[in-house]
Length: 526
Image (cartoon, rainbow, N blue to C red; front, side, top):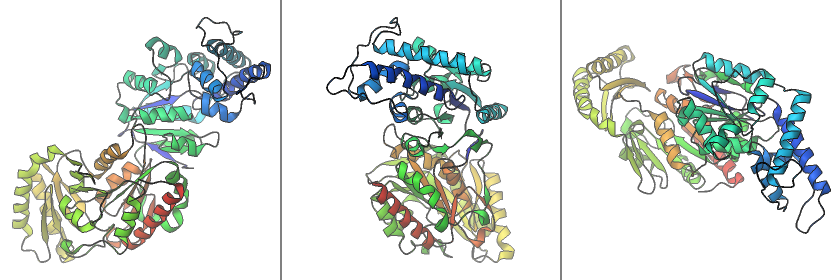
């Protein structure tokens, strides 16, 4: 099980919490009320052909009832047992053997248990909610239950959340129940937050599925019943045993020297790769290809093309490189995968798909000028290389006398200062100028995930890179997938968001082959 997750207030504006099983332990009260009601019905009902009268189980609760409006839960469970009852009306008494009558019967049992036993609160959830509010993140409670406010009042939490969307609100607005995301979308709307910038916290399968279907940015599954695989399969990006494992703050980074080696550290991620369809994203230079003194000499490491082809038969694969699109496509030479050039400003798919970040065109003239200025500034410096790409200019100093390398980085900074349309970034033994736009490898990865994921589904992203420019993508997968960094002495002990590390492109290819074997064992295929 994933043991930690981070909610970054810079990335998310709101967090939406389910009630039962997340904020309060009323899920166990609901489960007992459902069991008592259904077991009595099944025991009293005469045997009929095609009907299954076995007692109600915990699996029945998770599969058919948990998180749904009560009438949907009644209907789903009875259908699973081959039992047909009339719908009835909303004014049916609890004694009526109708869908509405059974729903009323269950509700009466729940209210009675609530009054008798009280409500247990999960204190770590309350701590997380207050930490989010302190960081300026909006919070909402959502529930299929019409007793949501009654439960919150019994728990002393009726003033904890800014917004409440429960069974009463859903009825007034005629919102469908989970796994439809309508109630979650309404909660986000009331917080004035875009779904992509919202976190959903759920313990029910239908709830995480609703978060996935609704396009919410981060879906956290809370596994209190040993159902991690089910939560992941239905859409949870990360699964934790309780919300004490969730922190508020920037995505954590640690020195390269503290990142576990992938040879021994892959095991905790195996279940995540099996549970939900993965997508594999990789940098090229320094990741799939060893670094060479002259950029034009770069070629894939032995085994890289074979590993990519094997993976491409199992899941979507994409190369996200700082090189021009045409250049990286030619060098990798593997069919059936996506390619993203210029750090994701240019993208092309295996079936003729293409996308270009149009705003980058506005920086073309500035890039032309920057190239000329860099050539004038360092063109005569022995070993310096100025490389123009469609949407960037790179000044390499790998072959420059180390005592004069600062001349290259200083020239890049000076040129950037003269061109507000551009920004300077650091790469491996190079300085780079790119369009001054809110777009980088992490944005390109998220855009590709949106293209690659089947409708209503989520994917597990895997990213491997070596450079500072790869950290945006490693940050993007930090809480929802697997990040691998290729270490190098050239980087020193810099911080990284990666989960695992390898020491060379060749070792990365071995890890990719291991991942392919895991996917084959899980039955994944394109």
